[in-house]
Length: 81
Image (cartoon, rainbow, N blue to C red; front, side, top):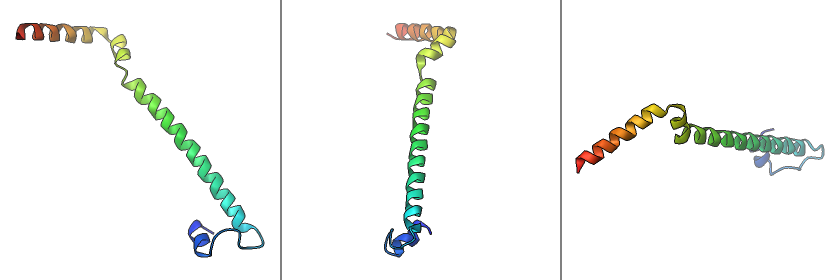
């Protein structure tokens, strides 16, 4: 029995055999597990984005292009005045 059927029948816990209560408990545990997976995925994504956009690590890995760009920008700004 899915959630829509439970709602249409008037809710959970209406039968004496407890199958609706068991279904609700399973659904709640599934939702909780899904929440935990989403939270874990979001934390991993946040860490990955922070790592990929950290300009300091880019400069550490390849300092020459950044040094060259800084010098070129300095000359361009200096001669522009």
